[in-house]
Image 1: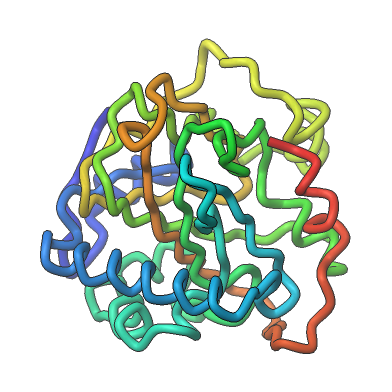
Image 2: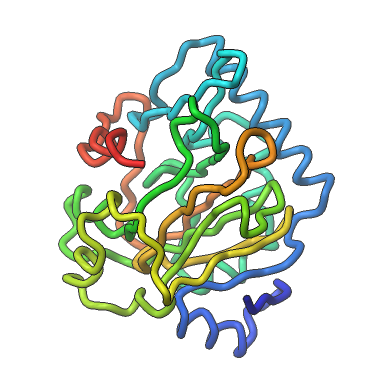
Length: 266
């Protein structure tokens, strides 16, 4: 898979690659010390939510799993920057300014919109609630939020662990971000329930500290790891950049219908 170095500007070559394929991979965007600090922040938030018995954050369900000893851990939670000054400072760093411009000069980081800053903790075990995710686009979310036409959204994933092929991970269909709205919704049907590999898919094989970006309108899935237990652990932090009307959420926000349905897929 072609990879690049993130500089102060997106180069012509990088922009052409992203516009053509709908995704791009940047090497070494965060150093080891930064990744370690983010992982500690993730653990601190998890411990807080365990102590509080939290089930949702701003109406978005927390996805819980169980360790082999029966103790709880979080597979996925949203709005992480609202619960950690370390994460908030990192995601607002100037190094991400060139990425914002991939959408446009008016784009912003969605910290309290969509799902905010999302932490994923994939582990392939019998009591994990989140080991894979079927083929989907992120476009239905816009429809549930009463938008007539899905808008552009950058899903920017910082990898907190190495992700070789045997750990599963994101698989994307290049170029599908430019498809019609109909194909955006029905190319793979039913959405989220279809897991079969596609001969055209590209796996995102990345290292700790790397950054990947994909257009949320492109078809993608999360493949289940071939490894099991601790060897399969794959942690990521996803940031979304958007350019659309401001729609913030708070602790009084209701759980969207598609989030209530999502517990039935995997």
